[in-house]
Image (cartoon, rainbow, N blue to C red; front, top):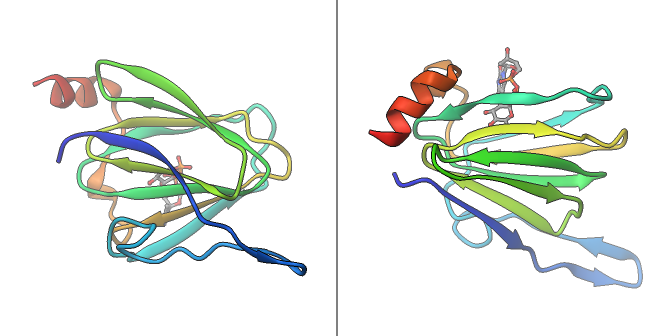
Length: 134
Ligand code: T46
């Protein structure tokens, strides 16, 4: 699978009571959903991630607060700010990711295409670079 990252804009359904966004597989989430997890109460100054995935596809949404993703495909690095519940960051293929600058109120929701599997992680940057550039 080729590395692919994309910032998606979700349609907000709203009325005078407030807003609602639904994530639906193969509609605004471009894969079948097998797992959802969320990262919250991240301590100030913490940087997380430091890995790539072999097969996993993920969609990351800051449903509260903000944080930034560093994305690296082995050639190009970019930083993506997530600061709105109507933005979703799609990450597919071999992409090294680090997450940082978590606001105190950040809740980072991740929708994933596979069940948790430690064997899918590449946690060594040298190994990642070799695979990404071969
Ligand atoms: C990713 C970024 C964005 C589980 O047992 N089940 C799970 O579904 C997950 C996601 C994690 N874990 C365990 C594995 C570790 O012992 O929870 C612990 C913390 O996970 P990790 O250090 O991998 O967390 P992050 O924030 O560095 O990375 C996570 C995801 O693991 C990863 O897939 O892409 O968020």
